[in-house]
Each structure stands twice: as C-alpha cells, then as structure tokens.
Length: 262
Image 1 (cartoon, rainbow, N blue to C red):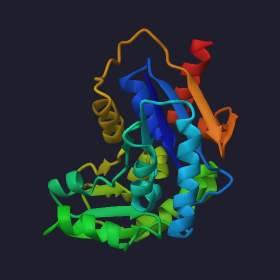
Image 2: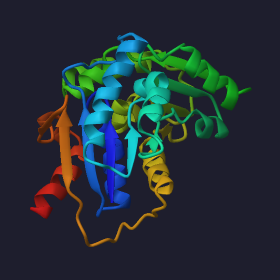
Image 3: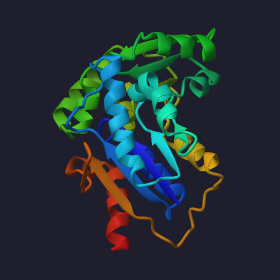
C-alpha cells in the first residue's frame, strides 16, 4: 500500500503521522513546495499551478491515493487536482472540521490563515454546518510560517495574538490550517480559560487519513508488523525529511519509523 500526501510545507506531517498510526505498513510519499510557500497570499491560478506540480511529483511514485493535506490547496485547486489525477488516483481534500465542532455545545472559533478567514469558502461551510451556532473567525497571520520554520518565538507571538482575538467563552476551536495541528497543545494552553471545561480542538488529520483508507478499500491495522517506507519530495527534488519537521512529535514519529526500517 502506498499513500501520497501533498502540502505547501510541513503541515502534511500531521496527516502523514495519522496514516502511519493507522497503517504502519503503508509506504508514504510526502510532496511539498518549500520553494514556493506560503501559498496563502498567492493567486488562485498560481496556487493551482503549484499544487498540480506538487501532486504530479507525488503521482510519479504511483500511490494508491493522494491526500491534499493543505486547506489552501483544497479550497482553490481540488477540482483541478481531481481532473488531472482521478480516477487513477483518488484525491482526498482537507476540509476544516466545522461540522463536528458545531455539533458540540457552546461557541466555536475557527483559526485560519488570513486568506481563508472570511472567504466565501469558509463562510459557506459555516452557513451549511454551523447555522444557529455562535462562530468567530480568527485570522492567524504568520502562524503557519512560524510553524514551518519551527520558530519558537514567532509561534508564541502569533498564537498569543490569535488567542487575544478569540472570545473567552468558546468551547471548541477548529484548526483551519494543517500547520496548526502541529502546535495544537500550545493553542489549547493559550485559549483555555481557568475554571472552564476543557477546550475541544478539531483538526482534520485523523479524518483525512481514515478517508484515504476507505477510498482504497483498506482498513486500519495498527498492529501490523511491517514498516512502510518514507519518500520525501521537496519542490520536485527527492530529499530527507526537513530538520524543522523533527521539532514536532509527528515528524519524529515518521523519522523514527524510517530509522527502525533501516
């Protein structure tokens, strides 16, 4: 079994780690675009062209499915990616987990990039899945870039700035960018109010990993004794896992699996 994942940067390691936990035996292909990130400020045409290039680099390795582990690419380029690769390679997009967050009790905050915050796409999801729920859209300028570079000071600053914009009574936070899932517990600590029930964070990594397995007719097998290979492609170049990825538990899990296999 081989599953590919694509993103502008290292945000894809959250979903890759989720796949690895469900199917340790799956070969993983991680294709990203560090030369062109961030994608958020780019035009729709530019994002689509870069996403297609990243996806095609992954497709050369003949995966059974491709996870678009990037909210920006899923918003702007998913139809083009599916037109190019399907039905040969099923393409699974990443959608902010607004529906399950709205199903819980209490107000919801959606942390997302400035380009996504207030976008027709996100407003449509709120309208469709959170009607009647109090939702606050929180822009997080610079957070994805800080996570990408494992810049601890910048991560602290950008999380604090977003937390200051988040109402104190929110009971759930939707992580609307895959990079944010890598610092989820730091986000929780910044938003959690003393004396309040535990804050619920809603990411997408586990859901897209499970959906990818369903699309190829496979189920989880966490006890598999086999260890899948890891292929990393950076802007079309075969490489090692970026050192910044090892600053996060998900990156270390992926690297440990590679080291064990060797």
